[in-house]
Amino acid sequence: NSSDAIGDQVGYQIIGIDAGAGIMKATHKAIEDYKLTDWTLVEGSSAAMTATLDKAIKNEEPIIITGWTPHWMFSKYDLKYLDDPKKSYGDAEEIHTLARKGLQKDDPTAYQFLDRFEWSSDEMGEMMVAIQAGTDPAVAAKDWAEAHADRVDEWTKGLKKANGNTLTLSYVAWDSEIASTNLMKYILENKLGYKVTALQVEAGPMFTGVANGDADATVAAWLPLTHADYWEKYKDKLDDLGPNMTGVKVGLVVPKYVNVDSIEDLQP
Ligand code: PBE
Image (cartoon, rainbow, N blue to C red; front, side):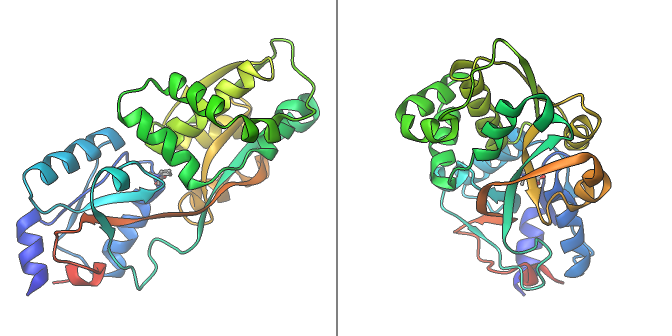
């Protein structure tokens, strides 16, 4: 049957990313939900996963990865999500902006700017593709802000400029979050007069940092499902500023040439 075929072809391996990512927890759940007892989820990083994907596609070999949208890989390759009838990966996901309790009072300008920030997956996609093509993330942020001055104006209009105030944003080196965090840093520094530290950490510390005040905010919280456990643990110490993007998605992804359509097809 097809699962033997695909399982044998990929060594019963799903190529994952960093252990703290929500998509890894969701994938362990999918392995249980669909009784994929023979399968292993391989830990690595966002960068290692896309390198492995690139190699497989160049060799026209089958591969199964943990994937998400927005991501440049969907522009570069012909990929498809595997159907998830048991909804192990949830449904409608959003990316939220979270601030430390107290930021609103301490720094109303930064808080309001972060609260206003909301963009589309196409807008983020433009920036991600540029970074993937080799543009430094800080330069990609500047280019994006200049090409979309109207959007930047909407987010910054009427805000009182800071005078070199410092602000720390925590994030994880996921391609989507590298884009959003660099854009926030660029606008805060160049339009609003801040000095911003983009603090790259693992997923757990991204949340604990904001909860304990080591960071002021993050624009990288995927809710309601992907980061549900972190949110539950720290929600009393966090201020949810709502979504900065809606209609995002996580799941298992394969090149279109792989002859599997549903996670159910991986069952023994
Ligand atoms: N991601 C990208 C993250 C959130 C952003 C889907 C890889 C995760 O799984 O935690």
